[in-house]
Image (tube, rainbow, N blue to C red; front, side, top):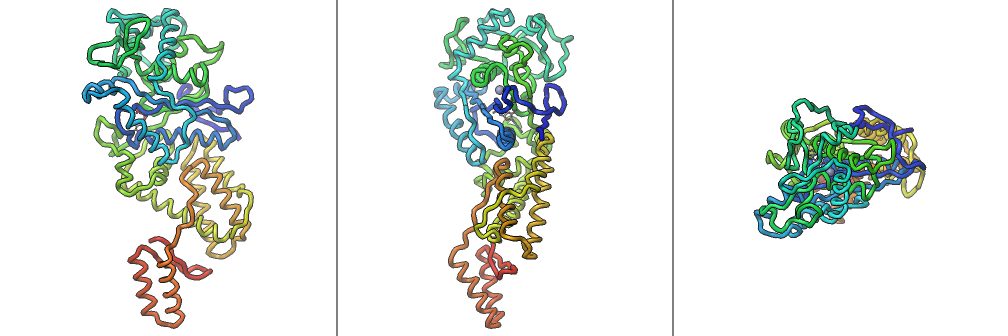
Length: 471
Ligand code: AMP
Ligand code: ZN
């Protein structure tokens, strides 16, 4: 069955089909981190969402090339480099390393390419050069180069593909130098910013003035360099729709590199924000948690990942520590079911249970309906637990269930948990308790149960006898 995804470009859910004529290869670009600080888990919601999309495409048999750039030069970075009096790379290096560490902790498949903006200056200059040649970019009196919205529109191009814009109030030639601005400040935006004393050592030579790239042109240059002038999927958080992605389209299509009838990007996907008490989690508001903050509180990467992929990607949701606690409980339920299934399968191998995989696929095919997918999974856990309790699951059926979970987890990435190892001391206590019960010494049996509880283990009586599990 086909995969349907909401496309911000058409504001509708559309069947996803790749540009590749063989229908197999998919090019996907997700705006990566700006390495001016540690990424917070709001940022991680977007990156984990990109990982989910990539994993699901791979699950469906596509060969994905996933690019996530590293924005290692922009206004915010330059301000901090200046404040700290260190080199650009000294400043960005630790945040970049932390990004890759966090990517692993959260179980994300590493993107195939993670280009740094500072290593693509020639491509950026080349692209600006194309826009100059076509008369769509111009040099301002201060030496900076700007994108002309008027010239772009006069060339028959459409500015405002992702958002509706009010051109009435726009004054021709008005310029905005900052990387970030609102829709209301619709104006020509900077492609190349001429060096100013505050930039310190952060500048490169160019055919115009020494300087540095604007943020938007970085993504156009890197994505087209690695995926070609037209590619399938472009992702990012919803705050990037305007101006970042609108400007990316304008720069990339303005350079006229696409073959006739093709756009820069076929399918735009935007993830909703992670909120804290109804407000966007952000550095500016100070209402954020980094992954490190949550690890210090004892939460595992898979628990955080689980929480980040419980809500539909187009719905905002509130982050709370209780929510994270709920994620832990939900994963424990799955883990326990898997441990029991392993026991029941007793080493038998089988093909994946088609029913569960079918329900999961049907849900995700509908614009990544993750709530539907989790619903099917927890229904399956309930049903499996009931069958296990009734002892009505054959080893082959248990093995088929395990194989199905492995297929699902290749997309979810929350981990096929290893058997929970029971320390010998705990096993010895359990055996002593069984012996006491057999000898009808219930006082001692209860005392041992309490001792186990104090050590964090509870006894569970199953049809196959007593066993312990983590409290
Ligand atoms: P930045 O490092 O600021 O360039 O942001 C990296 C990514 O995180 C971008 O795709 C943003 O849209 C996204 N992002 C920022 N804040 C949030 C949030 N609170 N929830 C979800 N995504 C976010
Ligand atoms: Zn970008």
